[in-house]
Image (cartoon, rainbow over all chains, first blue to last red; front, side, top):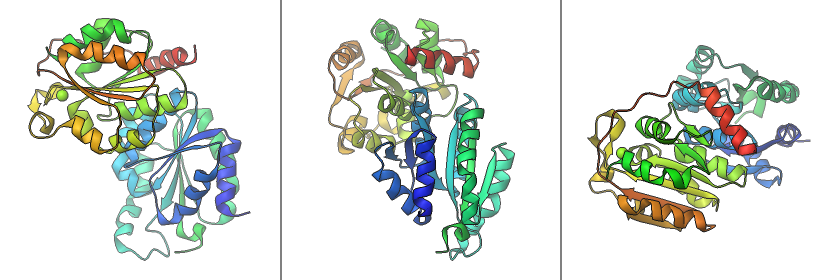
Length: 165
Length: 184
Ligand SMILES: [Mg+2]
């Protein structure tokens, strides 16, 4: 089974039915897989804070949401995470491509990578880092944890996890 | 007519529906005029009323009205193509366009100058866009609620604010009573 199929299977098994995405090359396979699943309403967003607003609405409408985005989005969404997702206590699994890590070809991506974990830590967002493919074995537990505690939770997936560029 | 007068006018029309209300004075005014558990007040996060409302409308079947402002739509312009391309016929976006950033002291917005939000919404692909005078907002909302078609209403009104207390209700209480109304 491909890693993309495994990830989306875990989302579906945890009743995630509304996924918003802002694309990244590394996440393209997961996004394709989500688009194909009847169990998931896939709604591409133009910006990640917009996507978090969509997810907040879907959650209040009774559908479990998730967002898929790049780590650069952490810089974009600090205010939304704090004043919407956290302030109203809403769950939000965030599957994030961790650009700027080992094997990164684009220097500018490193500039945001060095702040990513510090920002997530400062925001008190539980954070998991997938480096080897076997790390994804914990995804099911991470999703259950997210919907148990009603918090945004970050899953950082780096280039080594995705098998390079 | 200013925004608070529109809200007073439409309150009886929207009170039985799910309402997502924009940050700042719009939420404070609606809360003062007609607090309902079916109102979701935004206490922060400028710009996301339309997005929250769309997500809510797509996730369940009840009618949803997002009350937004011109300044807030300008700050989240990406919302309009997303709305246009994800049609939810139980969704109404009411943009109260007073041409200014009301909550911060009525600084002019570009919507009050050259930019037409109705034209932008149409250009983004929204198929049922209605621009109306403030006085006609209630009728436009009644028509939209009677139909089963996603509608964007741009209500043009004068800028101006009234004195209102801030909302001190806990956000989790706002969210909890709102979700119970959604599920009822
Ligand atoms: Mg305004």
